[in-house]
Structure formats: C-alpha cells, structure tokens
Length: 257
Image 1 (tube, helix red, strand yellow):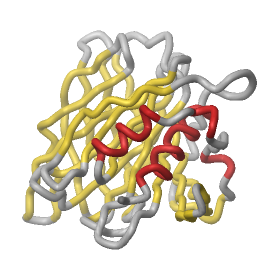
Image 2 (tube, one colour):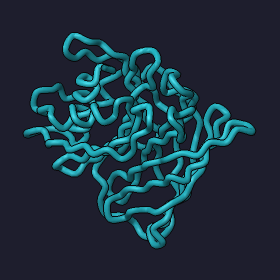
Image 3 (tube, helix red, strand yellow):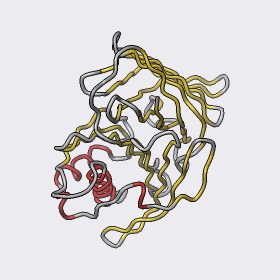
C-alpha cells in the first residue's frame, strides 16, 4: 500500500536529520491535519528537539500510524544534501537520487531554494495512479522577528497523479508578526496560488482553508499549511492542495526573507 512503511521510514529519517549530528536521534510524533475523501491528506511531524515537517501523502492516516509506531533508531540518517545536485531551475537547486528500504527502491527529488539552507522540499515517487509524497522541513524555529517581513522563493505545482515536483515557479509571502497574519501569492506552470490567514508566531506555523488556485478561467478552492524555520524565522516552507474528493493540484514552496 504505497510502500507506506518505506515512506514513513524516510520521513522519520529525513526529519531526524534536520537537527544536525551527534547523539541519539530525536523521537518524532506525527498528527493528521487534513484528510480528503480519496485518502490523501496533510500531516505535521514534530521532533523532541523542536524540528517540524509537513507531509502531503496518499493514505495519510496509514502513513501517520506507521510513522508513529516505527522506531527512529532503526532507520538510516538521510537528508536532502545526501543527494547530488543534478540541475538548477531559476532559484531552485534540484537534487535527485534513489533510496532503498526493505528491498524497495523509490525515486527521490529534493528541492532547495538557493537563498536558504534552512529548509527544503523532498518528493518521493509512488506507484502510478497515486499522487507523489511531498515533505517540507527545516531547522528549528526560534526568536521570531517583529514587524512585517517578505519571503520569496520557489513554488512547485503538480497536476493530479502527475510526477512531482511538476512545474517550478516562484512565490512571495508577507508575514506580519505584529498583526499575526500572512498573505501568499505564487505562480508555477500557469497555476496561480493565493491565500491569507493567521500566523501562529508562538509556534512558527500558518494555515488557510481559503486558498485560491487558478488555471486560466478554472478556479479551485484549497488548503495550505506552512512552517517558519531558523533563528529569526529566516526561512519558510509549506504544502497545499486543492479541495474535492481527489485534488486537481498539489504543491509546495520553500524560500527565505
């Protein structure tokens, strides 16, 4: 079932690697944030040492259950930088490779924005007929700034059951730490994405269920979840999907201020 144990193990190992080296690996607890009727959805993972990740995956409930029951000490320490840079697209540094777990090999694509090393997006290939897994993660959020700040970076959108990362473009987001609000605008492959909502400055998180995703004259509603990363909230990353029984588009972004 979507190699769910492999997926869960990779998520755990990638998230555990974010904190840097040495000592025992932190434990990770995942919780489901949204579930669509086809089983796709978004979950958040939080380590005992403070790193966070967001994951969009098919069979999200099963993946979260597997991840929470797995032992992080039994898996390899994997991070986006383990994969070689194979191309650069605008400000996006793209790394590709494979990983093998339990005798199963899957394709991995990692995308970093050239402006930051505090966050990255990782895509895991799944069987035909399923959306690929998307995970965003980065360094621990601390010491939020004051006032309003603008983040910019790389946005990716993938059509239903297409191969991630799909179309690569750009985004801009304004985060007002005083008013605790955010406003997002991005475009990739002719798909425009916009939304606004509440900024959780205490935890470095933001979300909206009022996302607007447009492809020409076709408009979709959607959901977005995002994270802030690093000392002073220097970087951001997030995932989004359109609404409906099966999302027309999924996507992600990574950037810095």
